[in-house]
Every structure is written in structure tokens, then in C-alpha cells.
Image 1: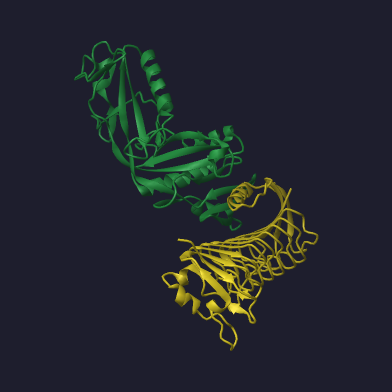
Image 2 (image 1 turned 90 degrees about the vertical axis):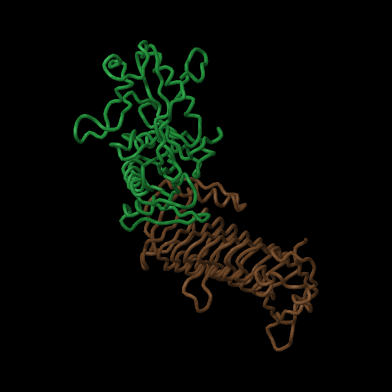
Length: 267
Length: 261
């Protein structure tokens, strides 16, 4: 049995909603039925078979080839299995992801991994705004799992995050970790303004010292953290090669909110 | 009576004590192997017998940096009691008073999954609201602020209801020196085995007991049948030329021996 593969024939003339093409929802379906699924978002009808050449039959392993930034909701809400995207993705990639592994080779649009609660979302390129953030109508952002962004992250990364670990290998834009309730974000590159704005708890770890730190974060000095070794081991298991030193400067904040969050600037 | 004779030693198959127990394992790490051992020895101090110590505990083995969760030197500790509630109380008190207090240490689960005992989930309150929890790969760790930085402690550790404890070997000899030497070598050999501890001083007991006493309120008293000084006065089990008897008590997590690591 080979992975169920969706190879895009041409760029769609409308945004498409691919939330129906997940291991959970395709389990037990015949190829003909899959091709008939409606994925359009306008009044003009668009089915899977119109946009993709479908091959393979292993629904627990799904592969998208040649997708672009009009393909929204790829891998949204699924709970187990494996999805590999060889291309770019539109908005809501892996939004509300519950488990399994979702790997994107290209760039992702806004809301990637928003409100996800489990599993691993690995973005090979850049992520748009509000990755790991909060979806409309929800109280919290990311609630668990691992989000790895190997490129740059857009603004408002991890807004109202509640649990889980986010790693940004490139740079992060403004308001990264804003209003975080708990969880961990590791920044390996540069970070924009207002990082950690309004955060209650949670940990923001910086490999490079941010240029601007909010005045509502209180300096606690340089201290040794055993916890960083646990985190390093975890990141290594997910192919993020990073040697975390044991010592870090700790700043607590945001004192304008609850003030029990922290920034750890690695030394 | 003699079942086996090996290198001049008679091995007699009489009986082996075996009490059902509950047992758990925790892994203690520290900045150096010396401090990991200090922490573990303190935690397993005064834990020879459940009769009066509340628990039986000991060091299972030392762990290298590659074997521990945080990449620091560590020690794996086993703790046994007769029921779960006592085990929970002993674990909390011993980790709270001996590991939390020891410079640079961290404490992790030594048995994964359920059934489980509270570890960091009760000790976290020492943080007085400043403690933070972190979930990594489904395991929750508590970071408790202390005067030397942070005490990292896993929320829970598993335990087993299949543990077994009891005095398994009585070593009889013609001289005290010889018996002590034989027992020391035996305990050293046993220390290589996984899942077991020998909780008594150096792994050896010189005061084996029988149940009851002539005195009211004394639940255990000297095992007179094996006391060499009483050979002529009691119904002794000892040949006349035996000068000393020592006992090796073993507590194990499993009723069957585990393969060597």
C-alpha cells in the first residue's frame, strides 16, 4: 500500500478548503468518493478530482504535492496519522490539530497550528501571522503539541497560547508570545518588538538577546536552569539541533498582567 | 538436609522469606556523581526495615550522564513499603526532606505510567505560588524556585504492587571474619542486578528476628535458633562449629529475577 497522494493539476481559481482530506476523515473511503468531495469556497463548484490527481490508498499517510497559498485548512483538526505537504500551504494549516504528524516543506499562511492541542506540526519554510495563535471565537491559542517553524514567523505568534512548545528557527515578528497563558516558545533568531506583551505565565527563550524588551519585564539575573537540558533533549528528538547552555538571564513579566511569565535569554 | 555442596560450602534449601510489598523507583540527578550519591544516600537512610523505619529503601545503581533524562550524573533509588498509602507518604517525606534540600538535585520518575504516586505534584506547593509546570512529551515537570536556583521534579512516578521483600539467605560460618567477607562479596555481586536492593547496612543483617517475644508489646525478637551463643541452651538450628550467622535481605520490584543489564 502506498501513501494516498493528491497531486495538484493547476493553480485553483478560488481558495480551497482541504479540511476534509485528513487521515481521520478519509479512512475507509473509496478513491471515487474521495474525488467527489467538495473543496470549493465560492458558488462555482470544485471537487477534489477537479484540482488533484489522486493516487495511492493508504489513508493513514497522506501526501500533497504542488500545493500553493490558496490551499487552506490542510491537515486541520486531524487526530492521528501522517500528512506530508510538498509545496506551500494557505491559511489554517494544522489548525486545531489534535495528534499525528503534519509536515510542510514550503511556507504556510496565517493561523498555522492555531488552537492545536496535540501532535507535531513541522513547517519547513516561513509561517504567516498568528501561528499557534487563537482562532476566532476561541479563548486560548495553542493548547498542546509541538510547532516547529524552520523559517521566519509572522506577527502575533502564539497569541494566548496555553500549553505546548513552539520553536522558531528563523526570526519572529512583533508581538511574539503576546498574552501567553502558559507554554514554551524558543526563538533561535531575532525577535521583533513587544515580545511577551501581556503574558501571564509561560516561557519565552531567546538564543539572541531581543533588541527591545518591554519595561514591564523585571530582571532576575543570570541563573542555572536544569530545565533547559530537558528542553534541549526534546528539541533534539524533533530534529532541532540546538545546544542550550545551562545558564540564562531570567526576566519575569509581564508585570502589567499577572507577571508570572518569564523570558530566558541564553548565555 | 544438604542439597548442594560447592567449593566446600553446604547450601541447604530450607525456606526463603517473601512478603508481598509495593515498590517504586525514582531517579535522582545532580551536578556531579558525588552529589547525586549524597542525595540518594540521605534519602535511603534509616530505611532498613518497615518494622520501625516506615520503608525499606536503597540505591539500585548509579547512572551515567547518557542514562538520565537531564544528561547529568544520577542514581536510581528503590523504595518499598507494605501498602500504597505508606509508600506515598514515605516518598513525599523522603524526597521533600532529602532531595529537595540537597544542592543542585532534580528528581524524575523511575517507573513510567500508571499506577502512579504523587511526586512533584505535592512538593510543588513548596514554591508558594512561584512554581511553574512544563509538559514535555506528555510528562509534566515542576520547576520549584529554591535558594540555589530551581528544583526540577517530575509530577508523578509509577509504582508496582508486585514487589517482593524478605530475608533470603542465611550465611553460616566458622568465623565472624569469614562470614562477613562472604556476605560482602555476595552483596557486591547482587548490586549488579537490576530491580533489587539490599536495604540493610552494607546489605547485611546480623540481627535476624523471629515473630513475637516473651515480653509484651515486643513484636519481634532475636532469632535464638540461629544465635551461636545460645547453641547449647535453645533448640538451635546451628552446628556446633558455627561461630557467626548473617542474613541477606533482598527487596525486588518483580517476583522473578530480571536479566542483568
